Length: 307
Image (spheres, rainbow, N blue to C red):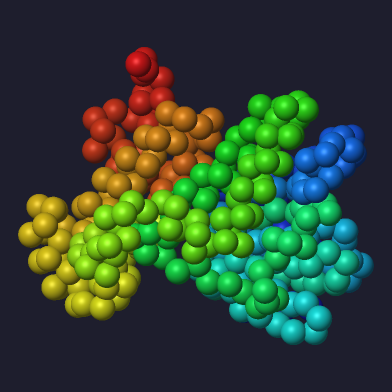
């Protein structure tokens, strides 16, 4: 773990696959004068994968609320003289107007989605405690859907800071924050009546597939999956093969590539960004894996005629 006082506002030149947007002052002023933006708007937003050496210390308070969602890895933050450890699938919100510090763990640096926001409604979206909040991962957690909302904001900003793009991004931000504030209702809204009735009867295989889907960005191991459903790795392999005809790891590889195809089709992310989005740290290995499953390289796949 990093000693909060050992580094000050540190960050290396860049994190492979990172995305970040800082709105120009004129855009912030435009949002503050708009009826929707005045209620809630962002000023900075980004995604840092495996953010080694990432650390921020603000002794002078800022006017924005800061929300950080740790997708994988570990980190820490401190506020009001208290220190908190952060792990995978935790998120936390730092209130505006209070000094704080946060950073990545030295040995297992976090992958984070982060956003600075403000407005008359900002305090309403804060969790009930300053401590980190765990987003439990299961077949109905819809974490991947929530991340797509965050990605949608950034993809919209990549196209420019037009008035329409800024207002649409603010509206999406309100929905995104609502999915965290009202997490149980958000999950229930994504379930059918059959899901609700059979939730307690869902098979271990379904639970593992849901776990894979919700943790697609993480370097999952067979032992992780087995622990999630409280069985041995050997038993899970047998159970999974009998239901799907494949081993858990082979299924996971195909799931990663299926998600990569969607990102290649519907986003402008670079290939070295997409590989991190699907839990593959090495872009060269990702390219080989993609080619072995799809028969063409990621670049060729993106260039192929669509429709």
